[in-house]
Length: 290
Image: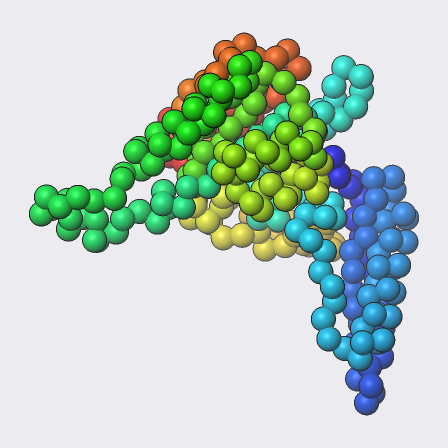
């Protein structure tokens, strides 16, 4: 997993033609210490400044989606029997807790129709007895049927299937997987996993599952500041937001367990991940999804 414990930023002056100039700021990271992160930030800022000066301005080349570690605070680490990091809980940029796993495979399947709904047009069609688009339950069942058909051709495979606000989440329960393995990428593609999620898992060498509700679905805005905090005042602003978020998000679940598909037995190495995920997401609570 690409997990960085230490983050800091550095700036470097940029001198452009006709006397134009400004400071460019870049982040650096390290899993070892803050000094290594600082050196990386300085080097990245220096390289970026040189590139802009050589090009006479313009735009910087951007990293591909998820190619660098995600700037998220690590709240908890989970080790396997050998002492290696099996999972980590982090906080993402909009304040949600996220489970990152080294080998426990999650599949994120978006079903855009669930959030769009059928609007006033669908209401009028139902009112006058005309055919309407499939409802949410039909959409979910259709997606689950595809997963079941796919799994029937692969004896030994097993999933826990969950509904999310915008689609489905699958958790493989029969075996551990390498996120960069071709078999994982094939499964993602054939099960219609979200393309951005596919790319992120491959680049980060980990799987991800959001554990807590999105704040805007709970009637709350995004955090006012982002980690790492610039100073004590910034941290206090975040803690104030977090207190409100905990109150509001407690009324919602991040996903809802639907059923098991395929092999019923959970591999011993995955049992603790399943328990942690289901407890943190409130998967069996019956609460509204957010």
